[in-house]
Length: 222
Image (cartoon, rainbow, N blue to C red; front, side):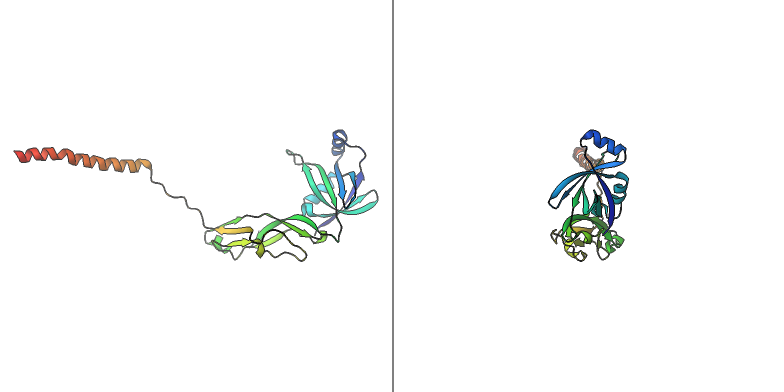
């Protein structure tokens, strides 16, 4: 589990105007809530939070948030970004306790070279994140699925995942994670013109035969 420290300043001004000013100053408007305590409006360093969120654990990084001289554990949630520039606009920090489980979505990484791919098959990943429940410090950066043994037609399901100690998921064991499928071969189509030409030639041949009959009859009559 990745951990980080972040200092938050109490924010007494709210609204679009102050929020825009904070962002121009490099401060990100945020809200801290959870565990039955009052919500707090704060600002944090946009650069420092961006650094945390681009780390290996991303939004699952356990943050020790220092607010008004007090420290509290938190996870970044409801992260809002500018749809064009991708810059941070607002974030919610959810207070957590080290001894209470939380939910999180963890990336699923496929490892190994599937045997079926070497035989011409195609590896398809169906599940990219796994919802899990664990203590904050037990949340893994990622969960790996070793697909080395998969041949063409084989499937890897959630029940086969090896979860770290203390980590559970409510996803059904039959849920598909990945599979190796046979390569798709396009059916070769016969050009319509060729078939029509062949039919036309056959019809013409039949027509020639029918046309030749009267001539033959005339000759035999002579």
